[in-house]
Length: 93
Length: 85
Image 1: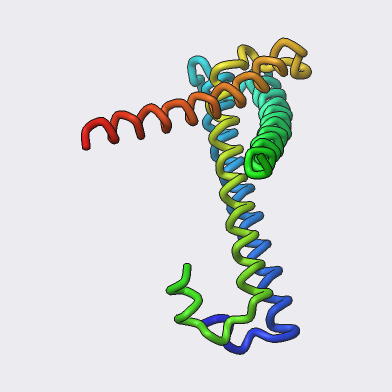
Image 2: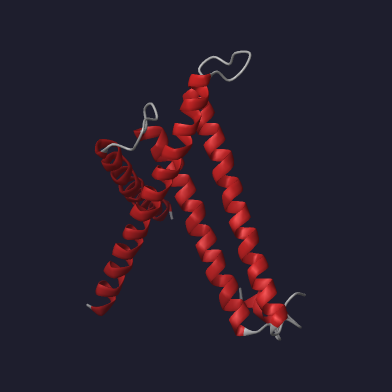
């Protein structure tokens, strides 16, 4: 239904909308995982308010969660490349 | 996939390719979220100022061993199914 008339400007717009929606879904996923994980790490016993040390813990936890995400992403990327290389070598044999 | 293509004969190739690549990328991202969740639980104690090198090693090992585990289980499960038939 979408692509019949998708030419030129239409198509460019459609593509950028798709990209935007994917980016949004990604950010939402990151946000909800981060909230879950950092709540678990930093809030031992929920009190009347988030105290200073809890807030500090949460911001550190967020930073480390993103560091970890980036490292995991790089590691997975390397692995995909290695597996791909193995496949091409095996096919060449 | 072929159904999708024949339903939309006028869909142009560029758009199809674009969607396929974006879907692939989304899948990879989904995987990264999953790995990160699993390995975070395994490797991170109390969040500190930076990831120390021991934690980094733990995370990279965790990703690779998780993938190894997934491959191994898939293979063994396939063997089990084959034996039954």
